[in-house]
Each structure stands twice: as C-alpha cells, then as structure tokens.
Image 1 (cartoon, rainbow, N blue to C red):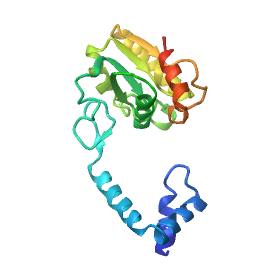
Image 2: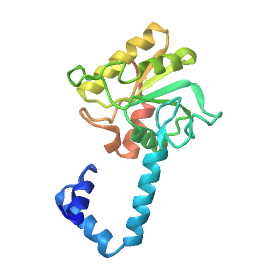
Image 3: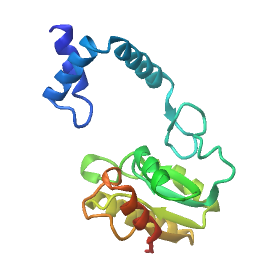
Image 4: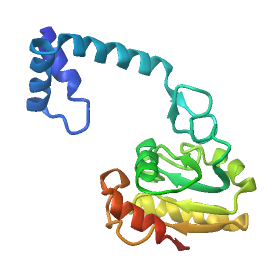
Length: 193
C-alpha cells in the first residue's frame, strides 16, 4: 500500500473523518503545508509519549496533577463527575464552576464489560471522603443515566448530597455536542436526586 493511502487510512481513525475528508487532509498536508504536517506529526508523537491521566481526577495532562487539581483555589468539597476529558473543557468554557472533577473515561455498560472496576470508581470513592456535593454530569443516554444512578447510590451511602444536570440537556445527548449557553443553563439548574 502506498504511503498516500496509508496516510488516508490513518486519518480516518479521527472522529468525523471519513474517506473523502481524509483524502482532502492528506493532499492538503502533502501539497500545501508540509511544514505544518511535520509539526503536527512531531506534536502528536510528543503528546502520545507524555500525556497521561491526572493522578487525582483522571483527566489528561502532561504533569502528575492537571492544572485544575493543582489549583488550590478550587473547591474540593464539590466533585463533578464526567464521562470524558472533553466534558471538562465544555463545563469550564460554559460555566463558572470552581469545584473539582472526576473523569470516568466511559460509562457503566455491563453488555460491553464495563463495570465499576473499569471506571476506577474506587478512586472516586476515596475522593468523596471530604466531599459535600457530587455533581453528576454524565450524558443522558441509557448508560449515562445508569451510571448516574449508581453513583447517586454510592454518594447516598456516604451521606453526600447528589445533584444532576437538568434543563436543556437533550435525552440521548452528549455534553461534547451541546452549545455553551444550553450547558450553562443545565449546569445552573441541576437538581438533587
């Protein structure tokens, strides 16, 4: 297989990039921006080598603690649980939330073999020792709702107030695809479970 075809196939691993988009990107990088392509390749290799999970919240960072966990001005008594690091970016851009986070890197799905152990809920439980409010910001898919219910029960055992994002998050929606004003309204209108 030619290098051009290999590059086209490699670009298709990106979400939303099909064969035609991958082909356009390939020819753009090879014809019009080779220096940009080299910089992209170098940065990608470095990121793949250095980026890892934050030791506390599990978001992606190149340090032991992410910039949010390292910020002593953040409230550790509030923990917002999200499915993905991209959800943190959305919440940070759309709201004035100043608490901490925990990234699940997925959601409970017994059919897919994803249970509490795979989501590292043991780490969340240890974080909850000093927590007063657990904010559940999982998606409104069936798996997201199941995960929220499970986490709500965990918090209830520890006497921790649990809230859930409300109004504006469509059923079946993912946080990464919701506009900032809708997410800000939903975050401000969260309800106790």
